[in-house]
Length: 393
Image 1: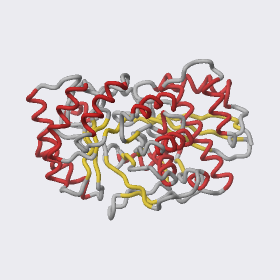
Image 2 (image 1 turned 135 degrees about the vertical axis):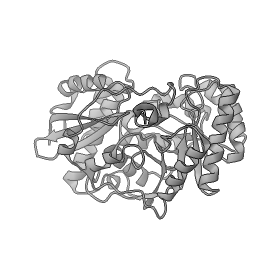
Image 3 (image 1 turned 180 degrees about the horizontal axis):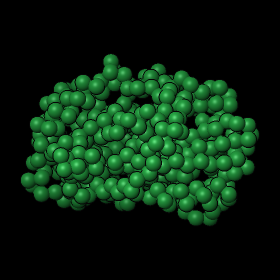
């Protein structure tokens, strides 16, 4: 079997472009991958165009390790987010091809299932005014949907520091969420790398009464010693530190793991080299008693890929999921993806061969690319270009 063609589609939601890549073979079996490339979609498409002729066309999709190795090394360039995202969606599609050709779900090829339920947490649910009563009502809808965990960045456009008034407002939002969801629902605090170390520590201490399940990316990802400083202070309070979505290779995780500067690793499968890379990271993390909770801001295909890793990975914790609240219509792009069960807030395992989903190419074509720019440091970014701040409602 040989790869004969790459066929990308770019689908737009109001705040994210999702790139779907179909990988075709000479035996008629095709696979698909997906990535959300934040503000750099043209760069991704350009990389794939060059990589197709240099590495991918004519390759055996069963030789996944060899293809990934060649894509990472043979360009003689350091790989970053763009190249690793291209590698990831090709790798994802190859696993889909292999599973379909062998008529087995991918998780069976990754060692088999170690769980039959995959816990999930909701994101993208708080596209409301930054007022406690509105966050309270929005959080209630999350638990009514069945989720046992949710994530929130309540900090507005803050960067490095946050004023006392904004700090009180952010804490009040988390207080309202805790009141809405009760004591048994996890609240994960997303900081998006906004703060300097002392501010991240100060804010975490202010949030302790509301029992955060973790603090995520408290400082920018470029200085791991600063992260280590924060992690030492925060972990002493019993709150885990989670990070890793903006690290794109195993090598970038080396210092973080050796410093034990986090408790939970959040590599994004669609930016990190794909399923096998995430499995390798999980194995390494396990030696340090760390958990993985993969970052996932994609649509249904990458979500499916994450579920296969989750199913087969002992130190997996919980799966991020946007698509019940942010642009839920994107789930119509596929059939076969399990839903989060309202009874326990978990996904069941995918059952079909390969990634277990069938993509509707007509649906993708009906939602063509639009100009989208998403900026986490502008006022009212949390509306994700679809709430009152964007529409004038």
